[in-house]
Image (cartoon, rainbow, N blue to C red; front, top):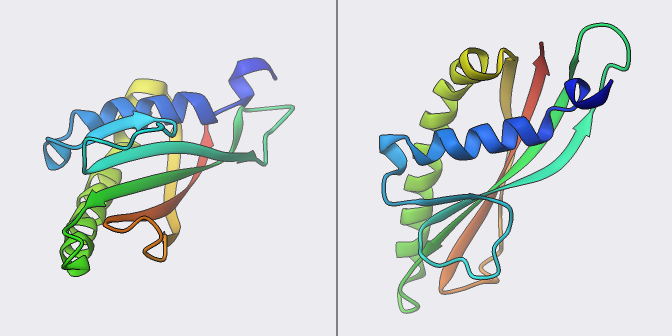
Length: 142
């Protein structure tokens, strides 16, 4: 199986690099992993959740789940401002993802079927920051 049967790091690294170059995310900090300091805002952190359904024999294929943590700063007096920024960022990330699977095929020679399983709130626990976690499921094969 070796590295051919694992997809989480090549996909994480590629998404990070690809997203950072997209015009919709200009001015957004994009990084792989969870940094201690989230600044500057807004930012997108791409974290690995799990790898599943790995084929040990035959063609390389599997499933990867990534967490896309989106952070936006807001005015403590008006929490809705951070929500609006976060909503806009979520929309732009979705636009980028719709094109990313073509880049995965071109650059990594992998077919990737993408779906967003859910988008979760942080329940305002980081106020005045707003955070959401998009759970991106990727079924891939080479």
